Amino acid sequence: MGKGSVALQSKCANLQIHMHKRTSTAAVIGSGFGGLAAAIRLQAKGYQTTVYEMRDQPGGRAYVYHDQGFIYDAGPTIITAPFLIDELFALSGRKTEDYVRIVPTTPFYRIIFHDGQTFEYTGSEEDMAAQVARYNPGDVEGYKKLVAYTKRIFDRAFTDLADHPFTHFSDMLKVAPDLMRLRSHESVYQLVSRYISHPRLRMVFSFHPLLVGGHPYRSSSIYGMIQYLERKWGVHFAMGGTGALVRGLVRLFEDMGGKLILNSRVEEVTVENGRVSGLRLADGELVQTPLVVANGDVANLYRKLIKPEHRRKWTDRKIEKMDYSMGLFLIYFGTNRTYPDLAHHSIVLTERYKELLEDIFKRKVLAEDFSLYLHAPTRTDASLAPAGHECFYVLSPVPHLGGGIDWDEVKERYAEAILESLESVVPDLRRHLVSKLIITPKDFEGQLDAYLGSAFQFEPILTQSAWFRPHNVSEDVRGLYLVGAGTHPGAGLPGVISSAKTLEKLIPAA
Ligand SMILES: Cc1cc2nc3c(=O)[nH]c(=O)nc-3n(C[C@H](O)[C@H](O)[C@H](O)COP(=O)(O)OP(=O)(O)OC[C@H]3O[C@@H](n4cnc5c(N)ncnc54)[C@H](O)[C@@H]3O)c2cc1C
Picture 1 (tube, protein in one colour):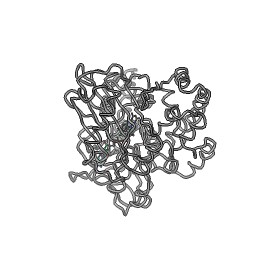
Picture 2 (cartoon, rainbow, N blue to C red):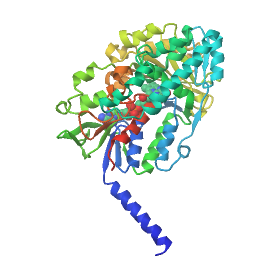
Picture 3 (cartoon, rainbow, N blue to C red):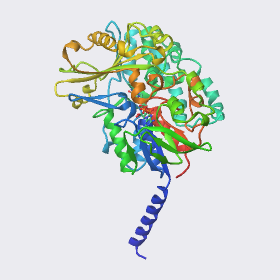
């Protein structure tokens, strides 16, 4: 037998294995980053995978709005740990750069205090130390020690545990001594205050939990790892916007043979004898599949998609007793002039810090003042707006719907107050405004089926982290798995993409 026919035979054998593998099916509910990453991993593992997405576009919180030539990324804009994305492409021997271009941005953030004083937050220890010295030379040593400490947290909490399945209590017990050693009972703010004394620097180094829905005074110091993660791999942006990254992941999934169905709401995860039997879609279609991965809101997965008789752990009562992250109020807007002096990412702080956080998380009232995140993506990619125009979004953390705020009533007034206050950073903004779209927590509830309109699902506090968070393998229904912000390790792109890595360790071979 010649070499050629041996090669052909082995190719056929491979194809047979491939075809044989594809007889196992899997369904993913939702096409957020967690759902897409899970679908890609399932497809790579040999499952014939279908993603059902209820909206008209993939991406979930990374939806894209278009208005008059402005391209607005609705949600995530800061890409950290890009290697997690490269891994998804590498699963099938592909390369990220053939699908989407991801570029580093600097500064990571420009922090602007209420009186105009700024802090350029970058990944360079030297530059950061110089910035710290401008505020308080006495804090430079503390800053260096803080970096060293967040590295220790990062090495354990991210490197070892972000994609580690916490499905048994023993998993938690094993890491408990380390968590105690790392003083995880302390908050991020307490951790920072051990090393830094200047009040403004304490704000600069403790705001990171807000990026994943946490209150800096309540989130475990474990979340201090976020600042180290940014430092280690940098802050990045996808050219064409985060929407381009979503499209790249969808194309990768489809190139691998997977199927995405849009405008397809799952109404029920059907269960027989405690095990998944399939899905019931809004149009009445019944899909049979033994393996379902849920990427949508976890509270509403259990409350709405799984009948109460199949739920022993995640009862409505238990879900209602959990603490949920804040909501977000967003204005997407465009101007008919550019602002070359702006940074791509700015954080515009009001004077109040702890008290404003308490208004948002505890008292759940809409404060008169606000701290804002301002996104100006045209500073990196001018193609996101018509020539000579600037594209923005501004985000204000606000109480979730549990606060009872009537958003229809207050939204225009609140938006106007935000835009007015932004004029100090974006001069004459309202005179040059040509496009505007407002999204409130009510829209998160209506468009994403987010329980209480929460932007990040369960609040990242110690008692709702790791084993205490809904597990990646359902505690109630066999054959049901969970990925995304509401499960381990939590919100943010590194978190939800890592949840799909955990999933891969838990599912059986196809
Ligand atoms: C405004 C904003 C800014 C953010 N900025 C950043 C950032 O800069 N960097 C960062 O890392 N993170 C950021 N985050 C957090 C990050 O975006 C989220 O944690 C992450 O995108 C959530 O992904 P997910 O996998 O949980 O899915 P989601 O994005 O929540 O998507 C879930 C999907 O499931 C679908 N779905 C739900 N129920 C059903 C159903 N019954 N049937 C069919 N489909 C269903 C939904 O339509 C949705 O598409 C931001 C979040 C917000 C809101």
